[in-house]
Image 1 (cartoon, rainbow, N blue to C red):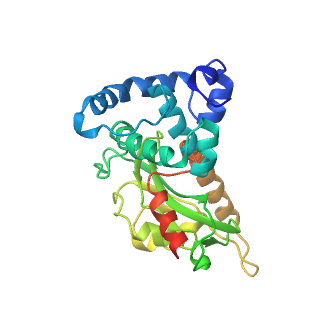
Image 2: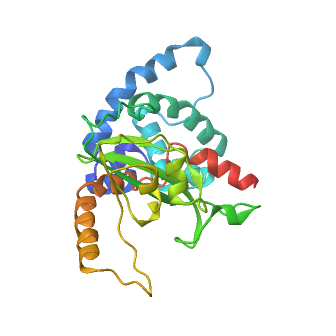
Length: 260
């Protein structure tokens, strides 16, 4: 007995728990990918070994489960009754097709007229402990080895950019400094991990940090409260992304971290 689309699709509640997508959204994704998949299959130059998953739905289900859980290829193979080499071939085959339909543009037009309020946030995802130089991947905040990715979104939840991935020890603000500057006139919101951004750009709002010697004033507390209120309106989009344990650029960093 192994996982198939035919079995799981009969239980919509379990389907979203397993894949991170609603059944209707998954079906729309299948419709978008199918023309590319059929074109690939019909190409004589691209024929190779069969992945042994009979339908496109099963193939996409397998890939989404990998993104959702970031489990090992061996474990994934047991779930879908596939050998490890077949899992590798399937991912190499399907990922380029998915990227053409759901990728985020690398260079978006970020003008102050279009973007009045922006939220930047660094997301951390667990990764396997590297064999060498473990400290570089260790996150003091999460108390484990992680990969960091910055996500910049608009007030309405539209994703504007996703940074390349970094090892867990890299500071959030250092990641921001390595990315393109955001529009000058736009209001830029971030958490306390971005201390120093206000010196790099104007119109940056970050919370005040209290210390033992300097407690927050009433005005500073009110500032933090308002900022938190604004951030909550758009952070749900980041939570949606965090449903998936793997990020588009995380695998390359993970491979490097294992090498040390």
